[in-house]
Amino acid sequence: MADEKKKTPVKKEAEGKKEPEVKKEAPVKKEEAPVKKGVLSWYFNFNLLYRILIGLVLGALLGIILGEKMLWIAPLGALFVRLLKMIMMPIIFSTLVVGAASISPAKLGKVGIRVVLFYLVTSAFAVFVGLVMGSIFRPSAEMGALVAGAAGKAAAKTPVSTVLLNIIPTSIAQAVVNETVLQVIFFAIIFGIGISYLNISKEKRLKTAGETLIVVFDGVAEVMMRMVTGIMQYAPIGVLALVAEVFAKQGSKVAGSLAVVTIACFLGYAIHVVLVYGGMLMVNKLSIKRFFRDAKDPFITAFVTRSSNGTLPVTIESAKRLGIPRDVYSFSLPLGATINMDGTAIYQGVCAIFISLTVTGANFTLGQMGMIIVTATLASIGTAGVPGAGAIMLLMVLESVGLPVVEGSAVAGAYAMILGIDAILDMGRTALNVTGDLVCTTVVSKNMGLLDQKAWE
Ligand code: ASP
Image (cartoon, rainbow, N blue to C red; front, side, top):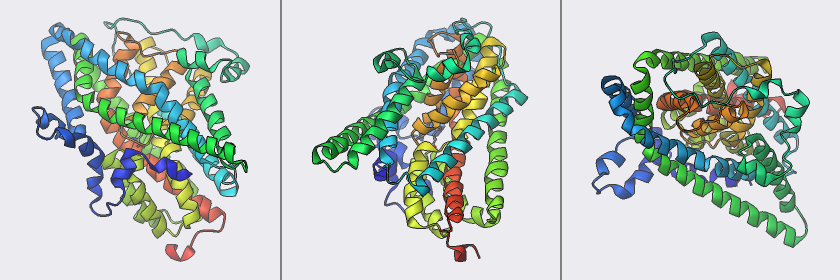
C-alpha cells in the first residue's frame, strides 16, 4: 500500500527516467507543456524557480522605487494567499488519510515502528534546531506600516492538559470550518488507520470499502497535487505582488532580515546533518564518508528538483548501492518521502520565529515553542514531497500559535516575505528531507542486522 504514496504526479514523472537527474525538473515542465504555443508561452516555458526569483527581485525593486504607487498590486498578492489557503485543508486531510492508511497494521511491525519513530523523533529535533537557530539569529523586519491584524498570543496561558485535550475534536466539521489544524490532523490519522484495518479485514465487504476509500482519498490527494502545481504557476506574480506591497510600505529595510532568515535556515540544515545524521551513522559504526559517496546523488537531485517524491527513484538507487535490503527501502523510502521532512521542520521553526518577532516584536514562550514542535512535526507528516509544500504547512504552524495569515494583516506581510525566498529555502530543506530518509533507512537496516556489510567495505 505504500505504493499508493508513489502515485503523485511528480513521482510518475520521475519514474522511468534513469538518466540525467537534472531532467527531474520535469514536473514543472509537464504542466507548462500544454501552453507551449500560446501568447503566454514565454512565461510558462520558463523555469518556475527562476520566474519566482525574478518575481521576488522585481517586486522588491518596484516596491522600493515606486513606493506607495505600487500599492494597487496588493489584490494580486491577496489572490495568491487565498488560493494557497483554499487548498490547505483538503491537502492535509487527503494526504494524511492516504499516508496513515498506507501503513498496514501488519507492517507496523518491527521495521515499521522503528522507521516511523526515527522519522518522528528526528523531525521533532529538527524543529527544535530551527527554533534554536531562530532564537539565536532573531531575524525580524520592521513592519510598523503594515496593518496590524495579527491575533495576540492568547494561547500562551492555556494549561498543557487543555492544549493536549484540544488536539481531539468534539466535532470534525467544526474543526475543519474553524481551521483547527491539529484537530483535523488527529482525525485524519485515526481515520486513515481505521481504513488500514478495513483493508486487512477477511470480510470482503469491509475490504472493498477500505480499498475504495483509499482510492477516493488518493484521488483527492492527486487532484490537490495538480492544483498545487497550477497555483504555483501563479506564484511568480503572487510573490511579485506580495513583495512589492511589503517593500512599498517598508523600503529596503527588510532585505537584510531575509538574508538572516536564509543564513539561519541553512546553518540549521548543516547542523542537523552533522549532529543528527553524522551522530546516528557514527553511533551505528557506519562510515560517514562511505554514506555520502552514494547519498550525494539524491542530495543533489533533491536540491535541484525541490521534490522528495521526484527524487525517490534516485534515492532508491542509492539505497541499493548502500546494501539496504529491498523489504526495508521499499517501505521506508516512499513513506519517508511523504512523512519525514527534517529540512521542512527546521525551516518552519526559523520562519515562525521570524514572523513572530516581526509582527509582535517578541519571541515565543516555551509553551508556544512546544506547540510549534508538535504542530510542525505533524505538519511535516502531512507535507507532500513537492516543491513549495512546506510553505503551505507553515500556515498551519502559524495558526496553532495564534498568528493566522489574514489578508492585509502584518502576519500576511511577513509570510509574504518568506514566500519570496521560499524557493531558495526549499532547495536546502528538500535535500535534507531526502538525506534524512536515507540515513534512517540505513540505520534501521544496520540495527536489525539486515545491512549488506560487503557494500560498506
Ligand atoms: N519541497 C519539499 C520536499 O519535497 C517539501 C517542502 O516544501 O518543504 O521535500
